[in-house]
Length: 144
Image (cartoon, rainbow, N blue to C red; front, side):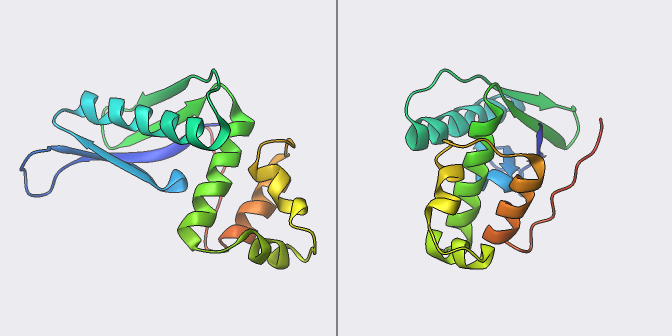
């Protein structure tokens, strides 16, 4: 799975020159060079993974198309999917209980086990969970 992001030059042309963002992970970094901005992004995602899941041996890869799009991949896909759920729930400003209500369930464990990364999820389940967290998100699957 590759998560799409964007990289662009700062509109005002002042330092730092490059801004990179990955909306699905709700992360944005910047740097004086394109390479520095991408390196900062990689570090930020790794820091989030370490914070939420403890120090795990994961490899974050950034794919740069040389224009305005980037892709983010992780050696532990389920962990990355769990991070998406956490970051989107934080961005939406809702509690686990609110997500559970949107899912039509009563137990917070019905959702929290996926956010903790303790239970693997299918693409269908991931889509259902993301929609419960933020109904405005559209997940698009495509081929490069």
